[in-house]
View 1 (tube, rainbow, N blue to C red):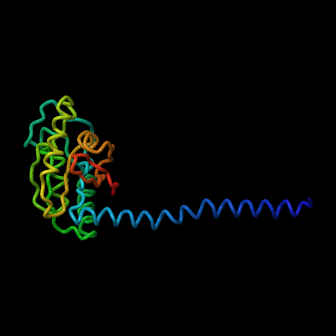
View 2: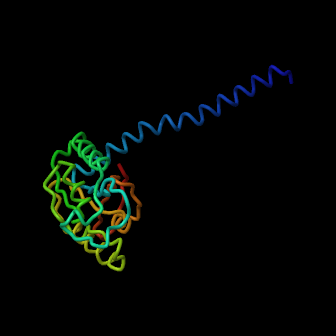
View 3: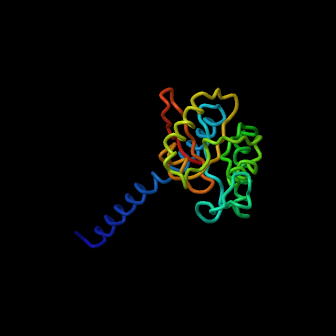
Length: 197
């Protein structure tokens, strides 16, 4: 086979591989936008709830003198965390969620995240409190949260603000600071994760 024919065949193979790889990537972008729109719609309609990990609060756990209601005794949001919570609230509003039922852990970093969202009055829900330092209550507390979710009559979009350990126990998913998990509770009490935002 002449050298120019081999070169031509190599170019055809390279072009075919490029198209084969690029086409799925091109298809992913609109699909991702469509998936994200469906997740926002599920929250708006009350079909699903949003649960997010509090925004950036440097460190892990809490100081030994931790006291609920005393933010000076806790690990709190930093400036970046506060700015990101405000930006997350804007994402909710940009997706037509101006008002929501907002429930939070009693930890200050969660309450502050929930307040800075600016989409509704923040109510305490102790079932969202961290069990990082007291993991033996995780199963009972997660069941309490599932029962609360199952008994709720959704009249408005629902936003929950909690902690990494709680969200993982409820959904089976690890989360980054500020990540929103979109979930649905079934009649059997099982949580289905629809996606994350």
